[in-house]
Image (tube, rainbow, N blue to C red; front, side, top):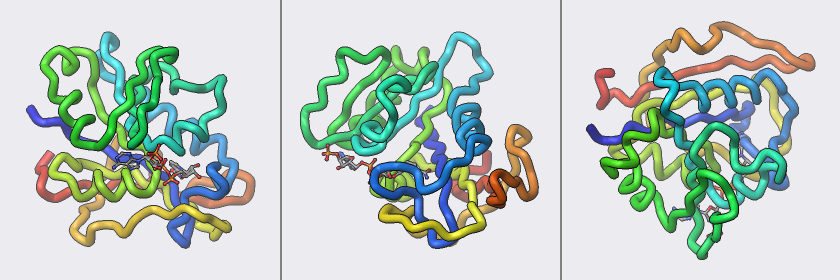
Length: 188
Ligand SMILES: NC(=O)c1ccc[n+]([C@@H]2O[C@H](COP(=O)([O-])OP(=O)(O)OC[C@H]3O[C@@H](n4cnc5c(N)ncnc54)[C@H](OP(=O)(O)O)[C@@H]3O)[C@@H](O)[C@H]2O)c1
């Protein structure tokens, strides 16, 4: 079976996702949602893959790098040497990542492939035939941002996931909603 890419992001009202290579907000429960969704597997012997751009990798504090209990894929056009990091691989483009995800031996090791940003990788993933679902936290406030989530395809269908809390969430007086969308080219 072909890989199915799941995308996860949090964006504020102007679709901002980042500022100065950091998150524009501090929302512990949203971070925990990200950790839980990207780490959770049905099969305890498998891990999930997280696919990110080099700047997102750089934005992770050293002590949290690589993201624990997940297989880290980092995209860069230069030769990134990640050999000193456990379960971390670098790729020159998304096609190379897909090839690895399709590798029969590697398939035995992972369950889900999550695209975790930033902008360009989100855009490429949403245009790809492998794009399956988008988990998008809508933060109901505007923050000053320099990095933005790309335009959403207009045919996305809202779906629900029993693992995702419904309705308005609130932390530090900031309201947000966890939305899940599906590419209609996939029936399930
Ligand atoms: N709110 C959220 O959910 C969320 C999620 C993720 C990140 N962020 C924020 O977003 C910002 C970082 O995102 P960003 O968009 O600036 O950068 P990014 O996508 O994380 O990284 C960009 C870099 O990735 C590499 N890259 C991108 N596309 C590639 C491709 N197709 N092939 C090969 N390499 C590719 C390039 O690395 P080289 O320059 O090494 O070639 C490029 O400079 C930070 O502020 C971060 O905190 C927010």
